[in-house]
Image (cartoon, rainbow, N blue to C red; front, side, top):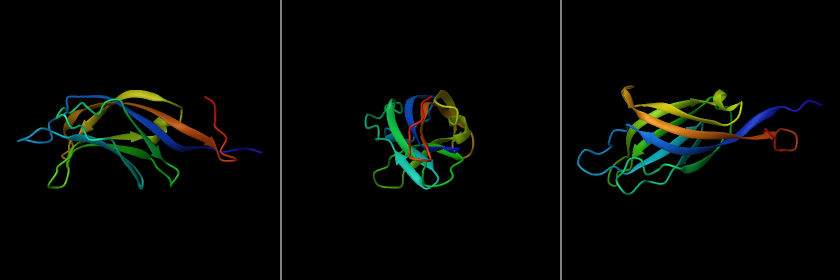
Length: 139
């Protein structure tokens, strides 16, 4: 009896960021990372110190069991207290990169106009299970 291997979720560690633009012109940025995978959305804590890099080494678990997901959208937003949050930059991570196992790499970020807006280093590992009985798969 053959069992189909599928991806139930991924663990994303925000390792570090570099060359990020500031989200606020008149005050300090309060950045956070939001990961969207289909209908699933998870957010990191907001960095309150005004440093764009303070969300590093945060771990986010993303559930992929809700349907077919082809990529993760990893966006950095600036939290605004009295208005909607501002998009600082975004990267797309193709799911097929994760099918072979863990990755640790830099992703180019783009602003809302598609211009380069920094880089984000992510360590991502998949949480595999066997469809028959949800038995964990060893790498």
